[in-house]
Image 1 (cartoon, rainbow, N blue to C red):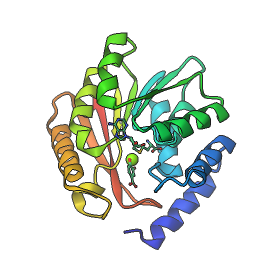
Image 2: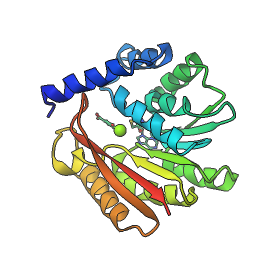
Image 3: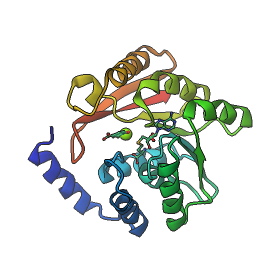
Length: 222
Ligand code: SAH
Ligand code: DHB
Ligand code: MG
C-alpha cells in the first residue's frame, strides 16, 4: 500500500536534505548490483531520522541487530564522533560480505564492527565483553525474535538509552503480503511487551513514504 502522495512527499523531503554522499548512494546501489531478492534497507529519510536521533542522544556507542548491506548502519555511524563505536550483527554471510565492503568504501570500517552470526548467539558475548551500556540500539533483524531482542536491549542499556525498532506495524496490520504468522506473532508480542514495560517510555511512529506503510518504535530507558 503506497500512495502517490507519500512517495512524492518523500522525494520532496529527500531533495530538501540532499546530503546523501557517495558512500550512501553506493550502498543503495549495492543492493541492486548484488541481485538480492529485495531491498530490506530503510529509506533515505528514515536513515536521516536515525542519524538525527543518534545525534540527539549524543551517541558514542551504538548497537544494531540486522545489518543487511549496512545502509542504516552507515547513516547512524555518520552521527558518531571519531572515537565512536557501532557494533552491528548480521546472520547472513552474503549480506555481511556486501556490508563489509560498503563500510570500507565509506571509510567507516574502524568505527563499525560487523559481527557475523545469529544475534541471539552474539548478544551474550557482547554482554560479557563490558562494551555495554550502549547509547542507542536499533533492532531490525528477524521479526519473530523481536521480544527477545528487546530484553537484550534492556540488558545492554543505561537510563537514557534510546531503543529504536523497525517494522513494528506492517506485520501486525496486514499491510503486506511479505509476512508470516510467526513474524506477526513476534512483532505483536514485542509491541505488547514494549507498551507494558516499566523500564521504558515508548511510542510508535507511523511511517509512510517510499517503503510500505509501517511503523518504528522508539523507547527511552528510564
Ligand atoms: N537494518 C538494515 C536492514 C536489515 S534487514 C537497514 O535498514 O539498512 C534484516 C537483516 O537481518 C537481514 O539482513 C537478515 O539476514 C538479518 N537477520 C535475520 N535473522 C537474523 C539473526 N537471527 N541474527 C542476525 N541477523 C539476522
Ligand atoms: C523487509 C524490510 C525491512 O525493513 C526489514 O527489516 C526486513 C525485511 C522487507 O521489505 O522484506
Ligand atoms: Mg527493517
